[in-house]
Length: 87
Image 1 (tube, helix red, strand yellow):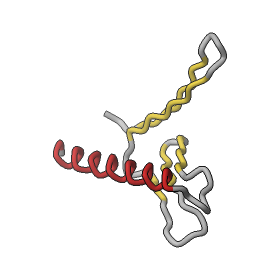
Image 2 (cartoon, one colour):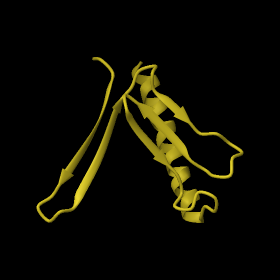
Image 3 (cartoon, rainbow, N blue to C red):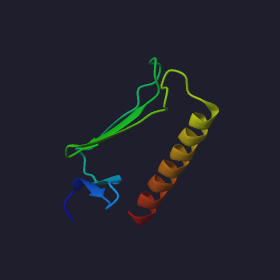
């Protein structure tokens, strides 16, 4: 299968919208999370689909933001282990 990324926007009858981003990357994917800056954020970019994750207030994260960051770290570690297992 070839690598690809895409974004979908679904608008419901009531006008609410849902945005989805799917990434099936190759070595062209870029992931940036630079420590020591004045804000916390991680960026993932591939095939013109970009995702940025950061706290609501990136210069003053809350305890809830820390909890979410830890959940993301756990999920990414699990993903890495699963990819390695299936490799």
